[in-house]
Image 1 (cartoon, rainbow, N blue to C red):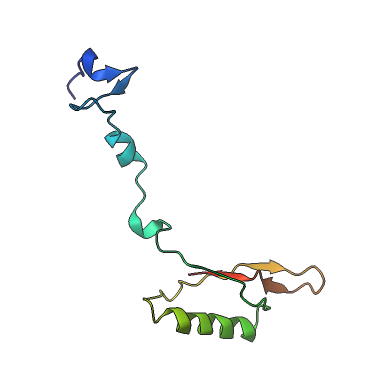
Image 2 (cartoon, rainbow, N blue to C red):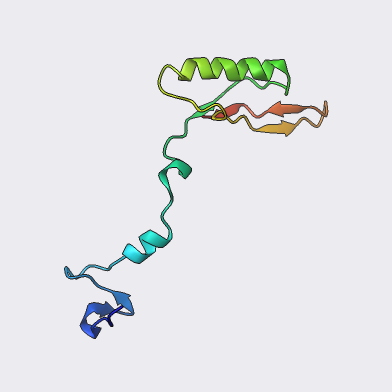
Length: 99
């Protein structure tokens, strides 16, 4: 790599031909692939709180049916976080789902 002329640096930062700071090296280093980002996440709030049983499967199937009319949902594309209920000791949903 050719050395950068001192007039093209600003406090050790590289300046492009338009006098703007050049962030291309940082953009390449910290680029997030599109399929791993959160560009296409839907949060469904106020879902019924269900235990980890057949009711959970029915709720997931219902949500899949509703939202599949608007696009494709991957087979493992619905995430329902679960937490342990201190009173019953069973796992239950938290009232929201991520698509």
